[in-house]
Amino acid sequence: MFTSSTREIPRTSAVPRHIAIIMDGNGRWAKQRMLPRVAGHRRGVEAVRAIIMACAERNVEFLTLFAFSSENWRRPADEVSILMELFLRALEQEVAKLHANQIRFKVIGDTSSFGPRIRELIAAGEIQTAANARLTLTIAANYGGRWDIAQAARRYFAAHPDALAEGAEFRPEHLEPYLAMAYAPEPDLFIRTGGEQRVSNFLLWQLAYTELLFTDRLWPDFDAPALDAAIEWYQQRERRFGRTSEQVQAARGA
Figure (tube, rainbow, N blue to C red):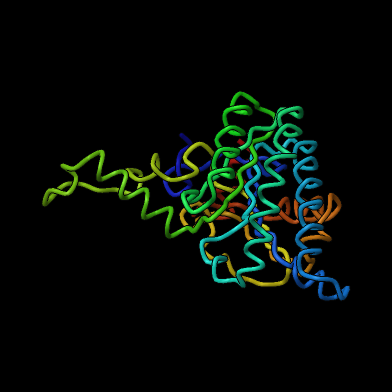
């Protein structure tokens, strides 16, 4: 398990160790071209494929993509059905490619709402790629940050019923092993495409000290040069983690 940025200063490098992305703008991309929304989602899958490989080539260790939020069930039923079909096809067609490229595949979120075939493919993909170490790709599906914290609390108190006793000590680090992404460091760089400037219930716990980049570029147009521009922006940030600029500069010179 990785330590929290609120307790210890994490290891940083010129290339973000962990990048998390909200892939927004598929529908608007299609609308601008007078195409059905499904065309935008299909083009978005191509962008996913390109960014996964771009991250692997740039030695990013962890990439987390927000594919389907717990709130996305509110979308029109036909669009939800299309998204589920695209997710199913991606699981059927892409996991073997990830494995061939030494990429580990993980899914976080409440997968109980998905059909049995999707759940089977998720489990099989995670098992097949478990030993891969080039890049860990996490897909957040039916995921919400509040859900994550709630499920972590539920699991913690189920494992430690004495913690409910009056006067029992309870600290944030008690929950950390039970969070959905306990296997990964906190994101260094968060990117949201599509122009919106909010985190939309994504990795609420984990984004405490993450650098947040919002871009107007729509997700289907987000490519390797756009990723390089985001990394260059990140490299200009001074990551203080509560320290002063003087302390950061002194640590660099140490």
